[in-house]
Length: 625
Ligand code: ADP
Ligand code: MG
Image (cartoon, rainbow, N blue to C red):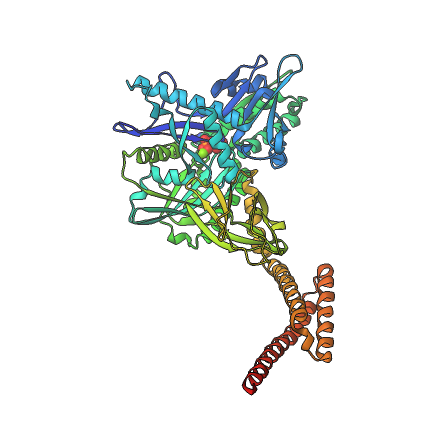
């Protein structure tokens, strides 16, 4: 029986699951005690790679060779990960196109630069290798090529660049991605919620490094994501760091050791902090003996209530994200039918308590929060392999997509939170006479002007017929596929000339997505007036051009005083246009334009009546003959 593997490529852990006649289950190879593979890769001095637990263990001795959290870097530039760079123990450098690369020292002062895709490929390979070992132990023929086909999950907030890069990682691992699905959607599938007649679902995913929250709706077998929010800088690692800080404080207060300067000790303490944190999820109190070189041992003790006070601001931050996500989905907490826990950090009692308080009902339990995403991916794998009844998955576009138009305004073709797959076409034209090529600049963002949005690609449509401005008709189509990948096509309707681009933009962090959405709300008023000013300029330029052309063509018959007042009005508009550029003096331009328009209205009337009187005169003369 054919079924595709589901793989959860996490920031801290990754794992594989499958759904077949034996049911839905995670894959654990013989001898291993957990399906989770730490998403950690190490590169040894001689160029060999270690992956998973072996790599994680090396972080105590050689933290500079151990790469964790590669998912935070994937599809992003060095500049974009500046914030992360400060907290990562390995070195980041800039590769071609500004991409973030990890630099690991090798023998003889040489080094090797690894891309996040390459690092993720090693993790995927290891997860896949273990999955095959587990299946082989069950007696399955692992030469079956369909076992190289996978459903892979990504955070709902991943943009095109991050999704593309994740797919590339799978390709590097020689795996074929049948479908990329969003992690929260996978979690809801794991709970079988696709079969509900109607339900509103909140998936709250607090992992090691990232936080994601999504509101999903199931209706008559159709499954859609109403809204997603997140924070790439929030997760269990932050809780570990808070405990670590408390440990360091105590060590510095009570001993002469200065562990902050020793990366090895720091790594060791970090692992100890994580272990302590996990114990506090089931115990009220936990302690730890810390070996302090030269100073004997030190007892570090932490109670759950102390830990909760430490992390409360972070948990509160996640709850604020949750509320704005609900707001985007236009739901009240009481409208939510099920709350799903995803990610290892949701084992922390304060997290579940906070959610229960918010929704006045306990979150759904039953599936291990570490495994839910992989489970759901495996379920989707079975669906796509034709083994299971189809559930329609509808994810959403996280930021509006569109093109730059005249004067730097942003024409949105696909709005934020539109379910995917989706497609939209709009007609545009040229701005200058005899223009034979159009440059299309593609942006994502919520603001009205492209300068406040993010450029994600560009292309040129050339070979257009030389026609007056406004005559060529160019249909621009934006298509976002199931995987959230964008394709933009422009087609000139008279000639059929077509150009298109698959957008492989540089990445955008969740933080930036959030900032852009918030800014679009905060600056809506300001944006609208800026946009109006530009629209007004465009209109004024059009009216000027038209009036001057009309005067040239038919102005001879106009009485001199009318020509005089027209010229005066024209120069007033031109002056206002000049000022408008500098001072944003929209009002003056508006007035000047009104005045000119009323005169040109007159001009048009006069031109028509003079044409009519000419026609009448001709007719009269004809009659007289
Ligand atoms: P990701 O999806 O980012 O890879 P996971 O869902 O695997 O993350 O969650 C990993 C995080 O969960 C780590 O920070 C880990 O310390 C934390 N975690 C795992 N188990 C527990 C627990 N019992 N109590 C508290 N935190 C836990
Ligand atoms: Mg996860």
